[in-house]
Image 1 (cartoon, rainbow, N blue to C red):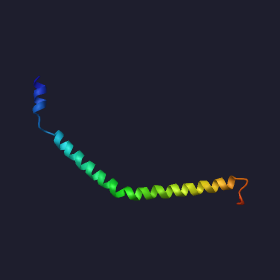
Image 2: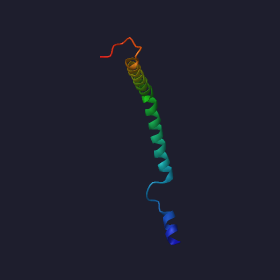
Image 3: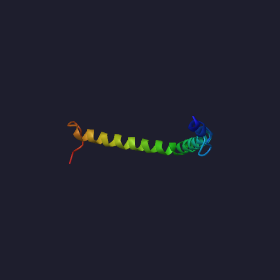
Image 4: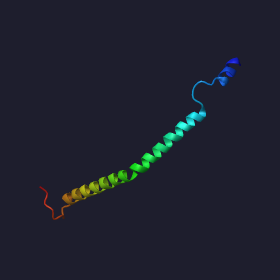
Length: 72
């Protein structure tokens, strides 16, 4: 039992409040970063989606026997 009492009285190291404060700071910084990067990431995915759709459409037209496009 002496070990438990000694453990509970030990004040070295970070406390739960300090860990909570660090976690709160990380959350605020992360949320701010996500909000700042959000529009740019959205634009990036929209452009990628448009490019993939255009390429897929071109492949479908090339493989379509009724297409007026001549495959080389």
